[in-house]
Length: 309
Length: 240
Image (cartoon, rainbow over all chains, first blue to last red; front, side, top):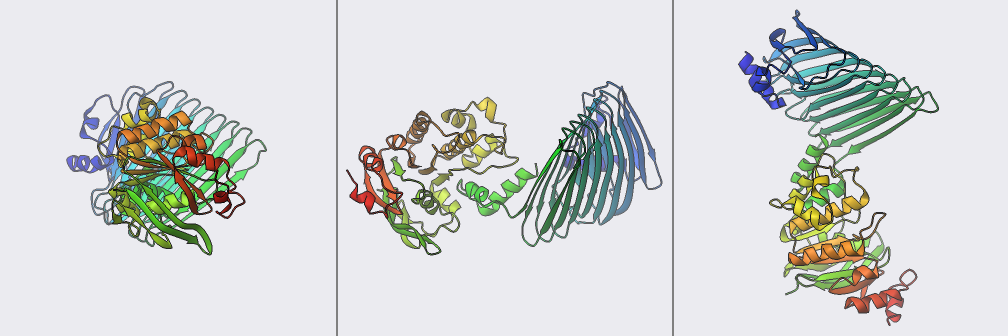
């Protein structure tokens, strides 16, 4: 099963050598079975199999800065199945790590993957969490990543969610971040929906500390009959808090998209801005590329690939 | 043989006549400056030659290398060797300068073209062609991309305009690069000193070209322009 899974996660950029390298921490779990796990100095890692998934606690110790990303692979290889993940991640003060999550459901016809994460980035810590998904080509995955994130003073948290190959199925992202004084948050979502895919993205950032900063950036491309609904919420409650919500959705064929930026400011020295653009591919971009000899189809491909990068 | 010939081109939007019987020809390797004040139809003419959407002549023909291209779509005109550098070039998310230049010239060496437009490759190759670039940087990258395509005809729509405008020396360097590689250029401008860099020039006024000749003669005419108030005839009457 491990070989099959290693083959499946390749599409998300995870090479076999990563999991053989003793200097790189990883956790690999299919359905509710842990296939492999490794930790490194300064990183406490405990993972347990549960009835329908995995429960993991990750602690990066104070001041530890990991030189290599931690790779986390989750997936369901069968056509039908359920995977419930519970993750509790803490980065202690002044630590730094990046995590790459590879989530694959290559045969999904009726697969549910629920991720419940609680993330704490303590004072001055720095966390980069990149999540790359592949849901196969049948459109039968329901994926629901939920995260409650707390960023303490001067902490930094960047999260990127990417699902741009194959079908989406049904995706419901729900992230909620609270950031303290001088903390920095960046949340980026890139999804390409096809067929009857349904995409729902809800991201909320509460800037409750002075000088906290945030960016919510969403890039979605849709074709066929796909549908997307994006809600980006930023609240500024402290002096010097700065937030920006930036949503761009490109629609083709009969696809439908909506964007709801919600901005709530309760302090006169806080500032939150938003921009949302939904529509077909920009005409001048198209014509510029066509003036270099690309066909209309090639031009659209280049533009969509660009915004989903 | 002429590279490009515009025959009696008319163009209207709704009931407004923008171009009124344009005749213009450009020879191979010629730099032709098109002078005109704001609103005289210079950019409209550029879009018509390129074949942009909603820019089809209401009358007249566009002939390129002896072939009528009036009905061809943009990419087919581009494949024949025509391209356009927009006055305000589009921005692209997620596309690096290197990739952008390679779209135009698949086997090109992007560094070489960046140097031609006065940009240090090491500072720009991996940057995105997005809003992080200033207006001037974006214009230079656009020119690098057009050069990399090695077109037969490059239409440059006011490369000298905008907040971060390119200097006359910059433009001369770029024109020299086009000439060296054998490209013709239709250089749209409203600055006389830029037009003086061309081989020939024409002046457009209210949708009509009323003078074509050496850049010196045309810029003299342009200096005495009354375009803002005339109907395309007064300028003609004011010819020196």
